[in-house]
Amino acid sequence: MQTEDFNYSDERFADLQLLRYRLNGFESLTPQQKELVYYLSEATLWGRDITFDQFGKYNLRIRKMLEVVFTRFHGDRESIDFKALEVYLKRVWFSNGIYHHYGCEKFMPEFTESYLRKMLETVGENVGDYEELFSVMFDPEVLPKRVNKADGVDLVETSACNFYDGVNQQEVEDYYASTKDTLDPEPLSYGLNSTLVKRDGRIEEDKWYAEGKYGAAISHIVYWLRKAMDVAENDDQRTYIATLIRYYETGDLRLFNLYCIQWVTEHRSRVDFVNGFIEVYGDPLGLKGSWEGIVEYKDLEATKRTQTISDNAQWFEDHSPVDPRFRKPKVKGVTANVICAAMLGGDEYPSTAIGINLPNADWIRAEHGSKSVTIGNLTDAYNKAARGNGFREEFVVDADTIALINKYGDVCDDLHTDLHECLGHGSGQLLPGVDPDALKNYGNTIEEARADLFGLYYIADEKLVQLGLTPDVEAYKSQYYTYMMNGLLTQLTRIKPGHQIEEAHMRNRALIAHWCFEHGDAIEMLKRDEKTYIRINDYQQLRRLIAELLAEIQRIKSEGDFEAARELVERYAVKVDADLHQEILERYGKLNLAPYKGFINPVMKPVENSDGKIVDVELDYTEGYTEQMLRYSRDYSVLI
Image 1 (cartoon, one colour):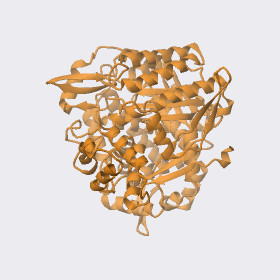
Image 2 (spheres, rainbow, N blue to C red):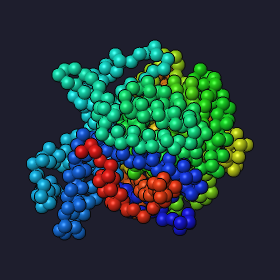
Image 3 (spheres, helix red, strand yellow):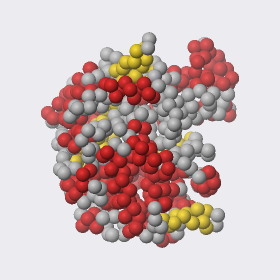
Image 4 (cartoon, rainbow, N blue to C red):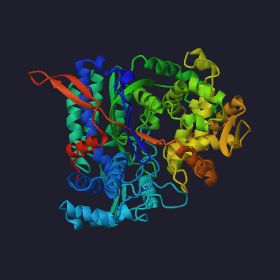
């Protein structure tokens, strides 16, 4: 299948559109590398149920109930109610549960409770077995948000994520404050792989490991990791896979630290992966890691761009506009690659990041470095699916700016992702004695703002032209315009009327855009034909504002200044102007676009010789979304 003939766009429902991604260059991998990708992909798919359960204690039971109705019912499948049930189930699949994957609010069924009860009876199910699920699904007051970050409330008690049981926010904070060894030069990621529960008045951790919670799924992950270890590309890769297995078998966070160090310092292999409890955005306190998986291999040609960035990491650090106390005196082990995603799982599926920088532990970054990836085949799919959709014509202020974005937009979008992941997250340092979790529920937003600001500051630097990363000194303006337009206007398309901004990345973009708008006259908001636009009047002033905000954000991070973080986020990143919001939603609605997109995975089919040895892996891009989700529920579910 040629790239130009590949159909990237697929099914659409609710506010979601499914895309397909192509594994460019997969045919150039060796048979051993393909076999490795296949085994790692199986390990990735076995984590799906863990993520569902982490995102809400009733999610797996609700999914199973709906799948029973959907697959067994043979009556009128074209009725309004059945179609509504089908859309609801598809949303549950997409979000790994009943909460919106981005906004975290519970989405409500557009069919009635009585209809669902009738359908369960029709397919021969005992309705009483599902009784406690009905209020969770249909009552908007019961467990309404998966992650609540509202200021001034108990974030644990008001969040439906399944990381805590019977404890409140103060108890969680006190527990981990008493648990942490603040003098440890190699601190653990406390709480990363456990549920914190209160039993008989005693607070304790239920560890997620092969003999504990989620053990049935983790055992399958370990099985496929062992097979991957046998066909690893080199001894270093084999070693870090073995350490990951030991971590899964014991739940020992010191082994997780060791795994991160071994993984981040291995650079020879073309195939790589992330598999485990990683990102903490799904926890309002930023402690618990949601399970995620991604299998990848390097795009060797495109990686030349990111390697140029990483080769010059020390120059960028030394010339950063932040206080020298907060810079790293010596940047270690920063690597960056453009990769092709080969399989997505858990918190990375169906909606996924387009760039990743790991590990998250600040001390490992400082001592051993970090790995950054830009996921080239996913950004390519996004770009191709968006061509000619009318979005720029509706929201960009004039034809000249549209032309600027059309000329430079794709290259600058990719470059900003590179800078964000490779340099932004990898830059700066905490002052001695500062707790990495000091910013609490504001930490994720501040960290994403820090990385975005670093990328925005440097994308306008002449150094990038000298390095051949941008074509000329005008290119950066396309990124400045689209970023500020998104932060001030167009990301509002992802928020329901009456809601505030909750998600960390959206808060970050709003913070930067609104702060820059209020602290100078570089950005203008204007009305034309009753439509609001932004115009950038002074790009150089805007860069100076970005530098000023970057310096302050880095100070907040380095000093652990919780109150300053709270002040910035609550003032600039949360509130929504209701009139502007309504206008943007109406304009966007006329374009008939889906604000959120996700991906259908390819199907991998191993080809064996007469001895049962895998000699090739064939790719099938034809599986539909519903077909894939039902297959995953059938073949990779052991937690329910």
